[in-house]
Length: 129
Image (cartoon, rainbow, N blue to C red):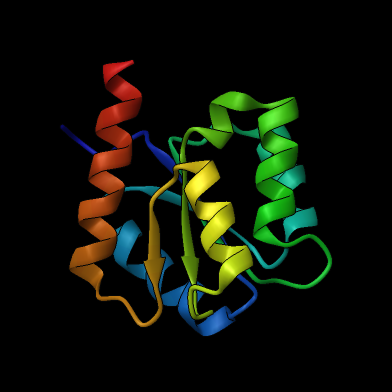
């Protein structure tokens, strides 16, 4: 499956990590947009139909949990394409949220191969449904 034509949104307030993921994914043929917070992500999500969204859980303004809840209510197709990333240790709130959401999560630091494998799984599930 070619990655051409697939658009990915990266939502992360850590600019360095967002740029690294963008470089990797663009090298693999994806079109990539970046948002540094949940507010920007909501605006971009309203304008584009993303194939997948890589979203940090802990961000200022609108965090990943709030963003996911908004997408579940307003754009369920986007919520089904989210991959969470976090540097937070899996505390009770995070663990409970991830268990309920049922979305994949990568814990920082993760390697490029883990990101690519998880992205392939999410994209494969989107095409299977």
